Amino acid sequence: MSDLRFGVIGWGYWGPKIARNLDSLPHASVEMVVDTDPNRLASVALIQPWAQATTDVRKLFRSTIDAVVVATPVHTHYKLAKEALLHGKHVLVEKPLAASVEQAEELVALAQQQDRILMVGHIFEYSPAVNELRKLVQAGDLGKIYCVETERLNLGLFRNDINVIWDLAPHDISILLYLFGETPQDIRVQADAHVQPHIHDIAHLNLSFADGMRAHIHVSWLHPCKIRKVTIIGDARMAVYDDTNPSERIKVYNKGADVHADPIISYRYGETTIPYIEYGEVEPLHLECEDFAHAIRTGTQPRADGKAGLRVVQVLAAAQEALARQEDVYTVSAVK
Image (cartoon, rainbow, N blue to C red; front, side, top):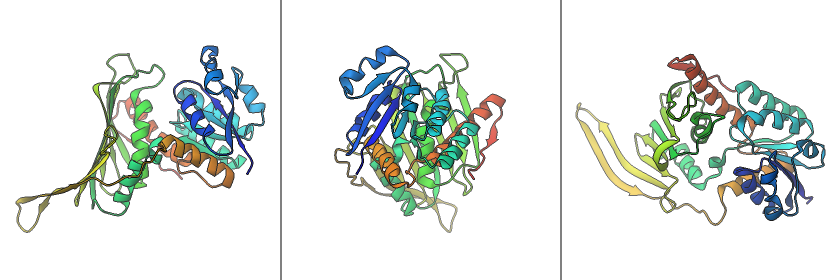
């Protein structure tokens, strides 16, 4: 098996983490790191001493590197990913895939034309807990799903290039689309900018699906407690995924309310179960990198492929359009 040679563009928060996981894969190594900040590159000699560090991204594009990771600000994703694809590189882009639907569509089409793998960093699609939750949904164990509520709240990190919707909501949108395999029909948005003018730091997104299911996404940079939670309410059972509780990430509640022959509502209080989830020592980011390398070697599409990234960008763009137009509802276009 030949070795895969990777390059990483962006040595901020995610770049070193992704590089560490790529280097841990068999027959793979990070050979080049690019960042515009020389101070950041100074740490490469300590963390990745075998990798070449440079501020010139053109050196990476002209190199014999097989694949490129784009871990830079969102507004640069399209340009860097496009240039990498045009130079025949496979590409993994941190979420979200691009800053607009048009950019995301072009990247997906270009990857197909170039016969290259395009992948997006939807890390929660590789979480064992999210995959256990997906099994419960797909098997019908929760019954008909009434609604889903997600919370992704924290104090910071504030951004000045994108708002909280583009920063945090991609995680929850990707989880929803992965769990249910559907794109919402429309979206309602309420968002406020408290700290920085014109940059929304708290937002509520309400998504409506064709089967009547509703989903509510709450994201915030301005809450005092860290919350990472998904609550699914079904007519048979309910499930809560709490990513901040490592010992009990998923709880399934046999609770509900029913109306039978008479108009009086009866309540059901059953057992609460905690499914066993095998984690081992493999983190979701490692599984994501493993999937990227496998896709490159086999030519098969990764779980979080370019089309998955496009679907998330469509929902984000619809939310942004609703805010820009100051309208209550904006229709989400479907992926063809």
